[in-house]
Each structure stands twice: as structure tokens, then as C-alpha cells.
Image (cartoon, rainbow, N blue to C red; front, side, top):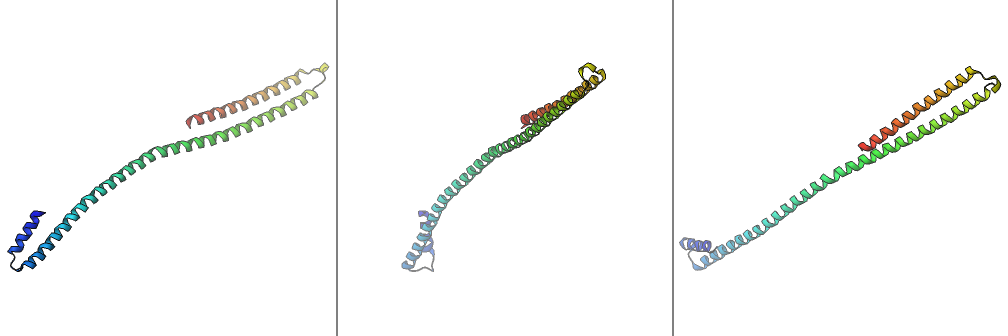
Length: 168
């Protein structure tokens, strides 16, 4: 700074358009003021640069933090949604299974009533008809087979439900 000021004064001394000492003093003061302003601007610039660097580092830190949060939060949300959907499907399947069980129970009771009626209609014990007993036995076996088929379907629904729960 001092060297620039001395250089400026030497140039003023060489300049023939500035002849009097007062003018040289005015030009010298103006030069000092400008150099002082430049020095102040430089200092402010250096401070501002530090602040800008700090802001940029904070921005990078925030971006990294946001990306980390997104990287963990979104998969957790996805997993929770998948669990909720799995639970909803399970609830639906349990309702279907309960309806099937109730229908099966109603079916078995109705067939039991029919069998009782058929037995009552049968001939008295003295006149036992072997053919009638075979028919009743065949009817009873068919009903047991139907019940077995319904139970197998029910077991399949339970197995499917368990597999869906394990996948979720």
C-alpha cells in the first residue's frame, strides 16, 4: 500500500499539468482515499468470501442430511405400506375363511337333518331293507366326501394366507 502511494506521489511530481503544491496535495489525498477504499473493499471481499464458503458448506451439509433422511425414510414408508396392505389382505381372507366355515357348518347341519329325516322315513327295524341302508350309506359317504373337499379348500385358503403373510 505504501509503495503504491509513493509511486503515485512520484507520478504527480513528474506531471507538469499539476503545478502547485496544493493541487498535488489534493491529488495525493484523493489517491490515498482511493487506495484506502480499495484496501477496505479487499478486506470486505475476503470476509464475504469466508461467509460464502461457510454458506456453501452448510448447504452441502443440508443436502447430504436430506438425502440420508430420504434414503432411510422412504424405504421404511414402503415397508409400512406393504405391511398394511398385507394385513388388509389377511383380514379379507380371514373373513372369507369364516364365511366358508359358516357355510360348511350350515351345509353339514342341513345334511344331518336330511339324513335324520331319511332314517325316520325308513322302514321299521323289523323290515330292514339292505338296499335302503346302502343308499343311505352312499348318501352319507357322499356328504362326507363333500365335507372333505370343503375342508381341503379351507386348508388351501389358510396356506395361501400364511404365504401372503410371509411375503409381506
